[in-house]
Image (cartoon, rainbow, N blue to C red; front, top):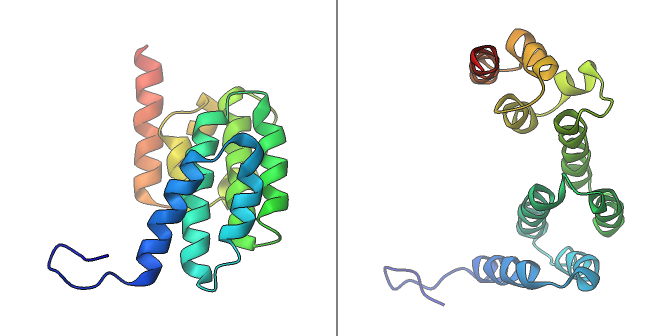
Amino acid sequence: MHTEDGAEEPAEHARYAGYLAELEQAADGDETGLVGRVLTDPDQVMAQAAVVRHLDRRAAELWPEPVWQEWAVAMARAVGGRPFLLRRLEEWALFRSVALGLPWRRDDLLAASDWLQLRTAAGASPEALGVLAERGRTKRIRSTARAGLARLNRA
């Protein structure tokens, strides 16, 4: 495969694109096996990048549905103890709890990554917005949460 300037595309770029396409097309029953296969790639940075992108896409589709919990358990098994991927699944679980009004802990939200704090600050429960407006990790997170609170107060 070649890039726009005619140079040869690195093999890992082609594999990454191929993995994303396969993961997007995977039937529910094949998804865990495919995730496991992708994670056998010798380039672990690329493989985990493909899997986290897939996890984000699927979690964003599934989080409000009851099937999400079963999917998350299956994915946790499929990623086999890889800390970054497990953490992303845990953060999606926290996001789901906040968004659906399920029990969650303030300290868990404050310890979460910038990624989760910003995602939560973009639209969540008034309680989570208050926590992030006051103590979010970055200025952008605090500002986004304050804007969310202002929107809620105008509604």
